[in-house]
Image (tube, rainbow, N blue to C red; front, side, top):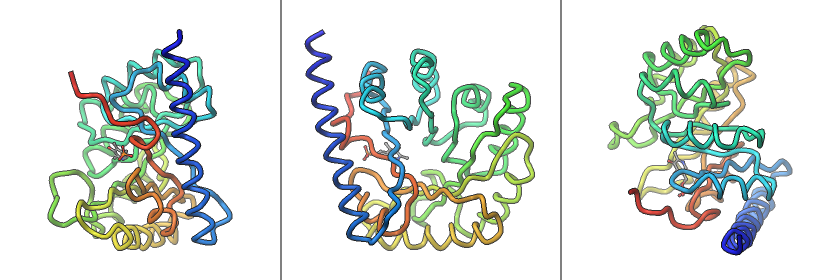
Length: 236
Ligand SMILES: *Cc1c(COP(=O)(O)O)cnc(C)c1O
């Protein structure tokens, strides 16, 4: 397929540019250990994810259960790690635990309970990695995320829940604000959590626009969509 060949080249070039930016940001921040790149493939076809896997991508991010479940089933042969990064309704927990390695958007007690119950019911062997999504924008309460003051209680719930593993924190920088400030707050929250739960080391932060600020603030996982795949196709 000639178009696939072209797309492969485009993805390879974009991926190389993003990897270059990550390296430069690490150099600038004096970091020797690079964060992991999660390529956010939402709205893009499974064929793109397959090409990315051929290019060495292991971690992929999705934000809608229906789309993610279909792609994960299609691409089960690739051994990819699926990160669920979108707002999650409790009635989708049963589906998500069948394919996701990690859920980055755990932000309320009911969701912890639903995920735990679903993991146990599915007879899943490895625990589901759960990241607490932290809302860094007091003006945007509706967009998901727990306020920093609620993180300790949620962490305790996840830590106690059968089938779940407290893995760390996730955040999206608020629109129109300085991402460095937001990611510094996230780093504080992450540090507090690690004191109590030393294995909760993941700090998922940084998108196409602000990956440099996230690297500087100590992100361990970056979630990059647009700059690897190009603009998302319109929703049909
Ligand atoms: C879509 C999305 C991303 C990727 O954003 P880009 O700007 O396309 O890099 C990262 N995190 C979350 C939570 C997203 O929904």
